[in-house]
Length: 473
Image 1 (cartoon, helix red, strand yellow):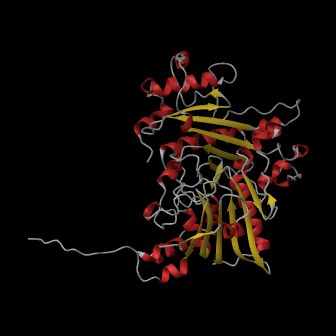
Image 2 (image 1 turned 90 degrees about the vertical axis):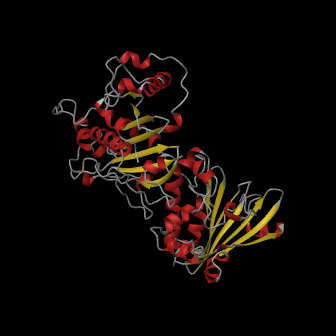
Image 3 (image 1 turned 45 degrees about the horizontal axis):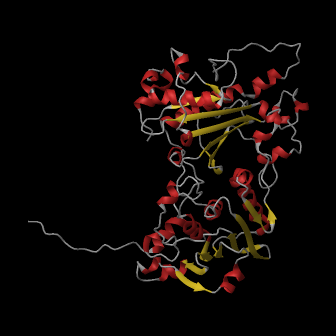
């Protein structure tokens, strides 16, 4: 007869967790942005460095969030400084940049050996918290090794380390990497601008970098020339997420290439108020910058490699931190709630003929459920390709759109009026209208509701058959 043994395996020591962080796919930029994501998108942020002989000694991030570090005086797993803490509320909150709530500790442990926080919480309570990672690793007791050091402090000490009336200051000391201010200062500034560009512009998010306001790049959709060669695709998915089913509009026109019905008029028969699917919407903006934000006087050049780049306000998006131009080459940037997570590794968009070197895709969504499909994990910046129905569906749409915006077709349209362009069968028609002109918002809402509430009627559509047979995993 078997007898049960009572063996205490215990918990892993914090140094195992810290070693995992420091030997993961993290890098300096991702760690820095992970800490920045702790700041609410509507708050002001100030970034400072102490440096000597061009060597950065510490990194200081301040914000004016009136709530400060909530729950910092709580015990156990609910304390945000607990190394095992994962804030599921933040994970479900579409208004929070933070994904799980572990980025502050992970980013701090990767960048430095010491993390200090000064914060003001409710009832004018001032707190100082220290995560000294070296001392934590030296602690013999595994459970105690996770404990931060927390003090209640006076207002004058708080104000000495914090420049705003409210909010928190995060200081990363004893940096683990040799960071040159003249090099990494520009890299960080460039990363901040690219990551939060849309949030700065649309949410009036204020970020100061060493007392200088970071100004956003001009948005491509605001360029009159870019609008000539831009496609805006909107996809509404079934709100249950049980079976992926999409309704597609391109430039406001109902796209019958993906949704097809024998009785098209029935699609808009339902005139009830539209009440759903908005939170499951994905918006894709595809732009060809060839002959748009770059000098159109060079449009007769046959060799696109000879293209000259004028100093135009919209070209800043395509400069690296050294001021060099980088062609997008069908890069697809992922934005959740207008925070950029990097480029998604679509494999079927690249081409060797160079005709799509000037094409850029941008995917925008708000629902955090999509993070799974776009490979956004707790470290954010390293996007992982997911071979699922939703990704294949989107990739097929992007492929057709970028073919219509290729430089080959653009150059043909630029030829003198007397010279008729050579007729060529299109590789894929991206828009088939069932009525003239773009649809109104009300008509779009009616179509989406009618189709997604009557999926059986459209189940035999060959373009969407896989959406009913497979679940996106």
